[in-house]
Image (cartoon, rainbow, N blue to C red; front, side, top):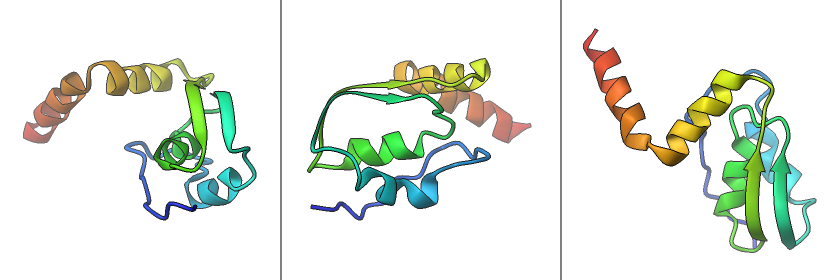
Length: 93
């Protein structure tokens, strides 16, 4: 079962796999204990994988060399309300 719902990353990132995420995931097994995304970037592949109902993933781990990018993803995951408030403040400037 292919889920055609597109999930767009909140981050624009050079080298994004957004356009190829579905094709990449087609090569994944149907059961994954831990999905490791070593070059997370915009997280396009991981976000698409989260949406798939035909692939069972027990846990997800995303990493990247760029520390600020990982901090942004942590904020999105753990405190999205802080990010929303920061964007509201930026819009008022």
